[in-house]
Length: 195
Image (tube, rainbow, N blue to C red):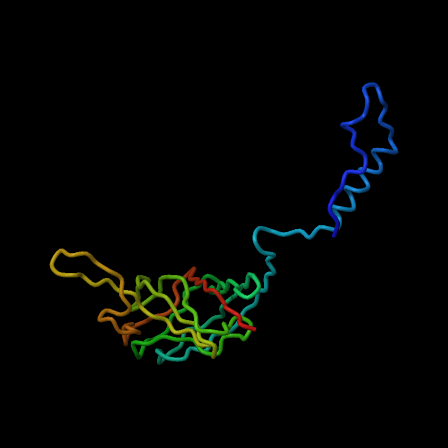
């Protein structure tokens, strides 16, 4: 990698002096070498994308599991990658609920973090309606655990705040009816790598 250095300073040429093509060729050659040997960076990182699909194994929460594949995309930023997971076809992926929990196990090693991380917020289907604000934890073992965010009212007419579960506990989906991923569902998280 080289930097461009001026070889002929044309600003000091005397009035009436001629600049010949050979002098310009030397400068253009030096510029060409400097440009050709510089690394190209896109923004603050060089992005390498990896894509794939997987069939989720629904860990808990269903007597009849949702069906369908999930798609992932990794934007490689070195030790902190961004992972997007979405439904592969844009179809609804719901099943029959039998507990207040919901998880996916065995996600591909390519999208597992080296430390537990949290996802972005998204909406899930619960009790047949796509209306639950949720987030997820993604474990080192490859488990996505979905968690509901609910509003708590502070006193009569008081402000509302978002909390995990309706009473501050985790995993508060309806234990009957349908739940799962609505059409167009996606989530994003940072996959931290320590090695």
